[in-house]
Image (cartoon, rainbow, N blue to C red; front, side, top):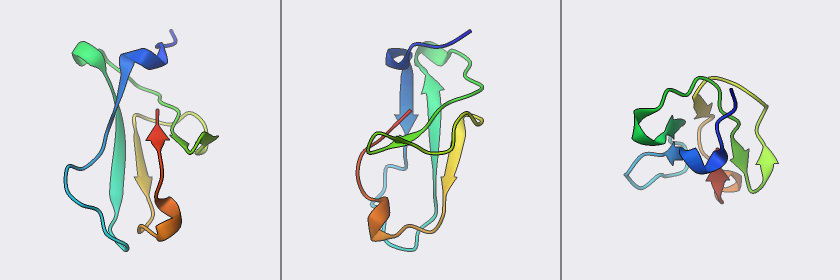
Length: 70
């Protein structure tokens, strides 16, 4: 069953990210609700469709900056 987007939280590392770092984004549900498939977006553009609840980005480059959501 689909989960409304206002019920999801995008988790990112709490540290400063630098060029060349690797990072994993995680989509989680509020109140520990189980989430198995999440769509990830960067600046409004979908990043490859449904996948698990995690997205690993390649080593960071300047063009990876911007807004992400799930």
